[in-house]
Length: 239
Image 1 (cartoon, rainbow, N blue to C red):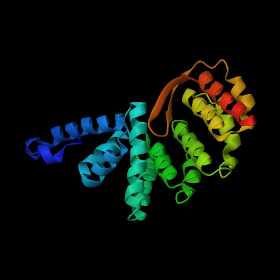
Image 2 (cartoon, one colour):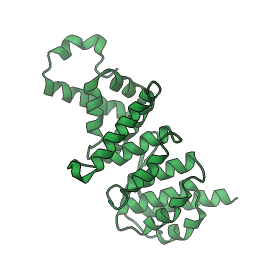
Image 3 (tube, helix red, strand yellow):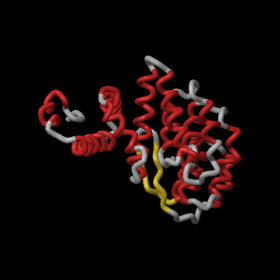
Image 4 (cartoon, rainbow, N blue to C red):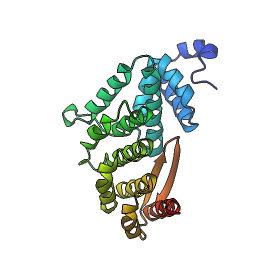
């Protein structure tokens, strides 16, 4: 069923007060995101301002998978509106960057992931945002999203992200589990054989992390399992 199914439920929705309407929209948007129905999410975010606000609110949801889904949806929404006016996604980028500013006083949770999702939809146009995003790498809570972006961009633009190789490999020693997990994953994604020793050191790392993959995939794995997968990828590329 379509989000809000406006053609069939105008009367029903008109009887809802503002708070109940937002609850209803949120439930519907969550359902669409869980199904990875990107086209419908983009359509509704474009047509309904309240739906767009709900999508941005979900970007800061504490459910890790859901907030990643919202980030990817925002990336696809930004791509769509950029087809008519490229300044529109740039405005969204500025808004997200502002949320990362400590002076803003807001929560940066999810903003880095959304910046990354917008960037990978137009890798050449927004390539500069990789380094802008990296400027926030001292905040360990933002590192998984930063590493995810670097890995995705490195695949799309081979060789252009090599300057971050030592940084990402070094993150396999980080104290935060998710940072180690995403770093191990990125080494495999980017085919960096220089990271083989780092992956070997993670063989006994049984910390469980959530790993988001572009397109909506999400798996709970130990860091050791992620490292083994990356080792397998590197081995296959050698053959």
